[in-house]
Image 1 (cartoon, rainbow, N blue to C red):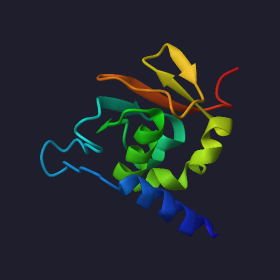
Image 2 (image 1 turned 90 degrees about the vertical axis):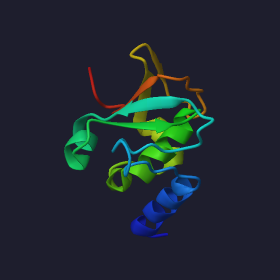
Image 3 (image 1 turned 180 degrees about the vertical axis):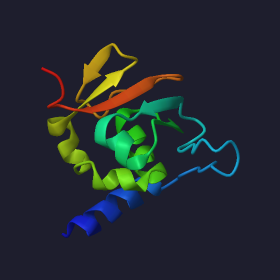
Length: 122
């Protein structure tokens, strides 16, 4: 499968059930209203190339948040590996405390999720 087809497939998977409220508050909400509202902070090349410091969306797990990120900020799909490869290449910090690679880690209302490359740091 070509890279562009793979990217389109990932974005399409994430777009299912999207609730884009950009016309309202300009925030780019995504996901089921039953899911908690979380903030995904973008750093490094994701922030530079998308021009966005963060995205607020509704997600009940890291996996759901990543799918929402791809649906809300499609240009991020070009910068991230396929979903099943993310745990090998990236880490996820929740509220600046817990760091995990588990995409099924649950998220709660108000959580701040930071996605960063596993090669960052020393």
